Length: 174
Image (cartoon, rainbow, N blue to C red; front, side, top):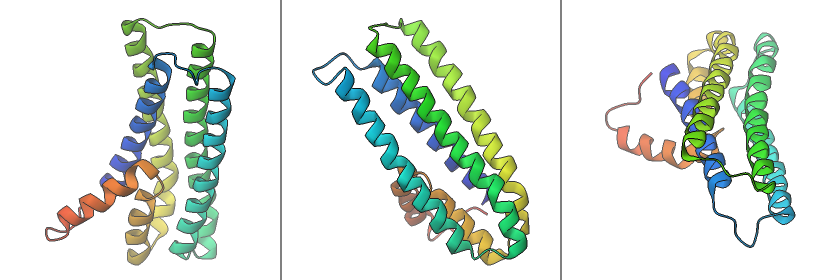
């Protein structure tokens, strides 16, 4: 289950990086400029509200003990910091695009490699923060952690459900 959750978090980070790259690399259209930045800001506020709700739901669903509550903070902070990092990267790409700067295909590859490296470091930080919390959970909570954790990433929710259906007969990896 630990490997599955880590893979889920990695996939989410990669998905966010790919989305950010496509947003920056898209040709200029009628929606570029200030309205596009404003739309991204609304999108970020919506995503933050959804993340708040999902983290609160995950925490409530785990039914943490008082000792486990102390271990939740670092995990939540790591998840939030990772989300902020993705937003900052997307915002920087939008600003580059707003200034009319165009990247060569090689520069795009370099930028993607940098974002993927940062995303990998963020996922490692989340995994490191989650280890003490996960170790303190009972078996029922561990099962819930895996299920609820996959749903933290909106890009992953539908994929996780599909994978669940595919593996239902074979059993999910622990």
